[in-house]
Amino acid sequence: MRSCYYSSLKVERDSSVLEIWYNLKENHTVNPLNLHVNIRASLEREHEPVYFAYNFNTGYSTYLLSKADPPQLSILGRVDLPRIHPFTVHLALLSHEITHRMQPMAGTLDRMLGIEKRLLELPLPANISANVLKADLQELHGMARLVVVCAHRTGRDLSNIDSLLRDLDRIGKQIELHMNYFQIDNNLHERVRDGLLSLRDSCINIDRRLENRRRRIENMIALLYNLMQNQDSTTMREDSTAMKTIATLTMLFLPATFISSLFGTNFFALFPDPVKGSTFVVSDQWWILLTCSVPLTLLVLSIWRFWPFVRRVQQKLKVRRSKADFIDSEKGQL
Image 1 (cartoon, helix red, strand yellow):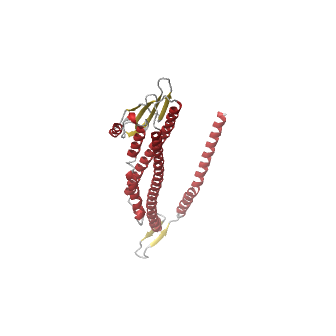
Image 2: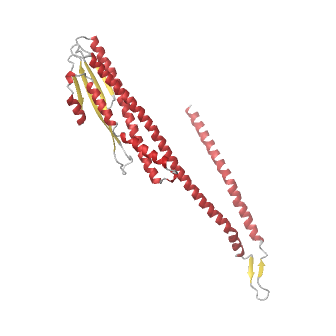
Image 3: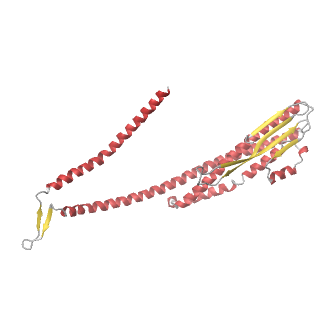
């Protein structure tokens, strides 16, 4: 049965019965990754339903736990069902389940404070190793998942307790209306009610603590992501500094490279002469070098200057076409 809570009151002459079904516990199992199929992981839910029936005429209660664990069986074995209030077992089962569920959360606060202390004590958090930050992030994500699951189950328990309180009032009203019913001690009835209310307050307190812990974990995750981004930006600045160094060295050697290439052409030549010494000869067609190099340089600079403008025009045209297509589709639907 997957419903969270369901109750039914059958009032008859010979036998009046209150029946209740609800899920006491819900276990989640994540299957390991399977690389041969498209589904990377699957979630399996296993419910532990509780069936309860109370006969107003005889005063007997019936409990059915299809998947009871040893602690739950020990709880049922220690109580004398005919002599106690019918909702006492509900109170004991819910109290045990809530206490048992919060045990894994006991170490999350210590681990979270340890990560926070390590980050605050370091003078330069940006010097933390990236592997350490990734390990802390992985641990915080695991704690966040545990907090979310516990908060979901606490909300379900809170809903079950509210429903049990309503059914407890229904039992009291039915007994007051029909004197032939099995009478329940009013003091015991109020004690069970006080126990459920106390358990309800405990669930509200747990939910408040889980919400506080969830916010702190989210803040720490955001802090670690900011530290990782700071490390990435520092690495990028170092890379940009290296690129600037390379560009500076290139600019320093570019004039000498240009002069070497220039004197390596046939337009300019240096001939050794044993009588007159070395003779520097300039070709009559030297203007061809300027005619080819200057327009080509201007063309490259023009393309570099106007290419961003062309890209902006293309983006604007793309946006206009998308708006026009959206308007046409809206008109077609009308």
